[in-house]
Image (cartoon, rainbow, N blue to C red; front, side):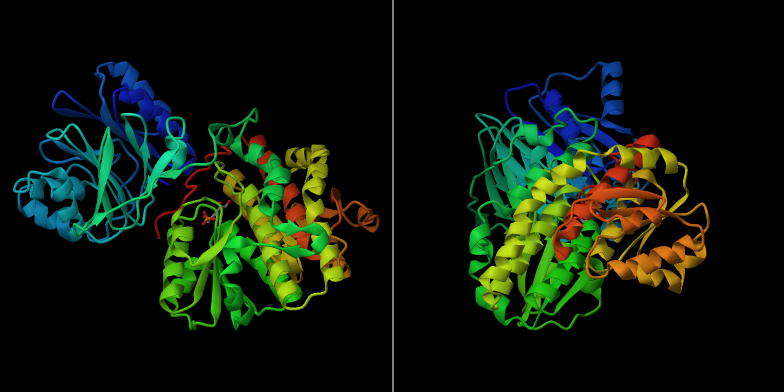
Length: 612
Ligand code: F6R
């Protein structure tokens, strides 16, 4: 979702801003803009479309001076259509104060009405613009930008990651956070601000994570932090551990393909130092201090959105079957508003790649307020969810840039498998039994690599079905969420209508859709419910649907029943989803490429969904 980058220091600012904005493109956006502070003026340029359109525009006008303070923004429209005027930065009446903002100001209409009555002129339809005018209004009497921003923010309700410049105070910028992530970057005689580390990691690894309600005054030589209610805060400087190569494409045409191929390594990373193969055990440092809570829990609730929710559904099958813990899975957005009955015997796991998803963060707070033990299963280190949970496990997939989540999903599944095994052992699973499972898990990365050795049949499928209007994905048991995930991947990057269903549910409605044009993907590994899925395949065959089977390498029966067979290695049933989803990721990818879709930046989607 919207991106923010800002700089103050001796270097020429514009190239730093443009480079930073390009690195944030993956988050999803529809317009871009910059503001530079130079010679007592603030110069703003903004444009609907891509960062490249903004750059072309800047080149054409060729009039921007060198500046040593500035900020850039990519906007994902919420209030007002994506056009040049609604793009950020927004300025006050005199063009002396400029703001860029991620998030939503909920009470903007009331503030706008009041400011209009006081003579302020608004140019855009955005909620953000009120911030520039509100700060301007306060600045009339309080001639201190840091103080004026804090006072202004006491009046607004909603979420923000915010950066403010004033032409009257050209030696600083102000950054503030409420619900939308913001980090400061500290270099030698230069400072940065960004919505995520990708924008600034080429320049510095020393960062400070702002918390909700904190406002920072940042100069080239340091920063001071206060709450919006003027309490001074000492902030720790932290070090970013990933490097630039991890957020670049590394020879692949798209981030999504790069990330799909990273999975043998990312799955291995999720297990590294945690899976004790020959001891048949698992060590998870982030859960040790809540061991008793986990063992005494009345039930587990797993909460997430989208792909992370699908991972939670697989987790439910694992936890109930292997660890025998009653488990429920909830959409974060639903959990929050249905007054859930939660007690302090509940353990709630929040699953999130970004660690910033607004609905998941809100669900976390709801569960915590009701007394549950809240734990994170998160990818982005230092993001909001792990900072508010009482413990948890990082999935260690590394930066995921492609908007369609791939490697984070398989790392989430691997982490859920580790948690399941750890609890199962604590609850009495025998070592011999556990070693069979730890060995299976240990072998998964190698089996993922095997799938990549023969992707041609998947590419051929994409060519064959590129013009299909609909797709159905079916699976049972732990592979039902895999069917959901296959459908989600396909629809989000190739814009083909796709539905995922439990295979047996098909006859309760979707079967009406089956005809000779309907491709139906069955996830049908040789597990305990194989025969049941075969019956469902027969139901589709009888209606002339075109059957694509994701089946095990040693399954010969399937050849006579499916029109197309994609092979995956066999593993223990509940770990199967980690392998079975890979061909579906590849199918979605090749379909999108065949159809000429923008794989890494699908329309309307954002990588990090920081609005409700
Ligand atoms: C789909 C996808 C989304 C995310 C969802 C939650 O490919 O990426 O469905 O899974 O927006 O995001 P996180 O995991 O960051 O909380």
